[in-house]
Length: 194
Image: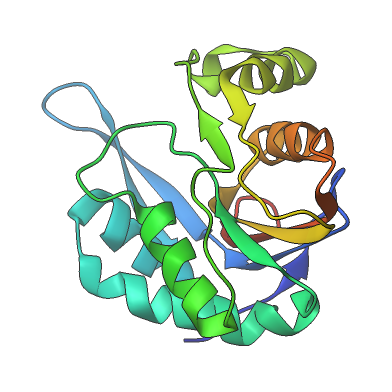
């Protein structure tokens, strides 16, 4: 899988993304239902993620996780455990959860899926125009559970898409309040910005 790794900046200690999600998208017009249609070209990672999330192609989980571990694992050598970003929508198979578990296996660390939990529904982030309001809404929906052994641990948050960074920022803010967390790293499969 070809990748174009880029650093992503935020309140976390270090973050990277494998590649852009979309390389080009051309508007073709509206379909018979009045919905816009596009001719979209995605990166290899973006296409694999699209197939996984929207076509339920679970065969994409393993190659995506392996690529993330191989391409980004070296940046996060002190990682104590992997945290999957809590899902915003319910699916039979949660793509981020499945990928995070395999990334953890590849990196030889545990995946702890109950340290950061989303306990409340939030409005669609696209419907909240002010970034600070999005982050606050997400922070109020997240709960951090005291499930770690004593000591200081480095957490790697795994997510599928980096867009505005609001959800990753909220997750970082909440994990920083947990006295057993030392460093917070972020890894995403794709990003909207170059």
